[in-house]
Length: 56
Image 1: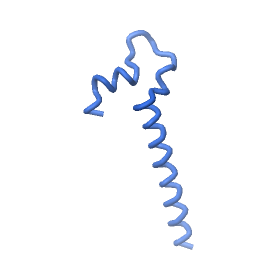
Image 2 (image 1 turned 135 degrees about the vertical axis):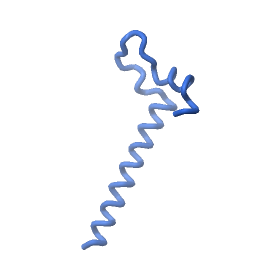
Image 3 (image 1 turned 45 degrees about the vertical axis):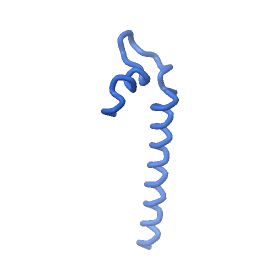
Image 4 (image 1 turned 180 degrees about the vertical axis):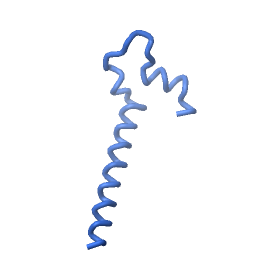
């Protein structure tokens, strides 16, 4: 029973890491989330990447 729980938790953890990686890739490389409504003066992710890339 404990072995099954560990296997399930490992699978769930791997799925979360993969989803986080996909979201990170979409946001940082493809700037998919830049088209949302921004107030004037807010930085887009591409502007943040150019200014704070090494820090991020």
